[in-house]
Image 1 (cartoon, rainbow, N blue to C red):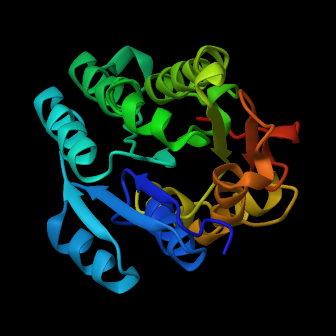
Image 2: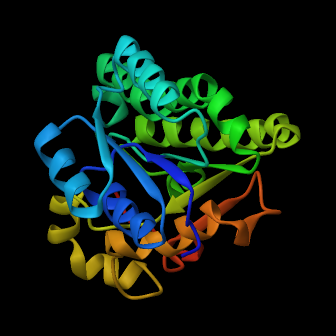
Length: 248
């Protein structure tokens, strides 16, 4: 029960990695708030784990502000914030859609920054808060035809490093969790069509399941990592160390 008596907000928690983190945090004793856009999925998962659900479209600034207002009213002290929500649109650069880039930036970067900023009073009230920004190995590893996604994850990763310095005196730790290839809804089609190639490219020999990100997140959320801030915990089966790279 490493998260007993702790209150956590996990964005993008209705499916994939976020849903598994919500289940794992609840098993560790946390009072879990789940965020998502799909109310039916969110309410069902909240009922399953004994948590609470709040809906918001993170591409909408007003919706993000309403989410902040709700959380400050309901949780004057917040121990863990997991910025997990994200979107990915693969676009070769000659076919770049800047409208899609703007939406990705809003969800992947701006919303995370707004949530941390807006929830600072609750995070400070914790006295030992942990912010976990879910980035990707592609915050540092280039991914052809996916510049927009790489840009947003690199920006989120640098936000983590800067805030780790600024917020440490306030009792707030900020770290990145950087998954490699994980079989989620966002990339299931690619994984299914290239499973054999991923098995060759990834030293661990396979793509990860969303639940395999839970242990790393619990570590970063708990007192076990009490002296860890500004770091990136990579959970990729050795993928980012492999010299073999896929082509577009």
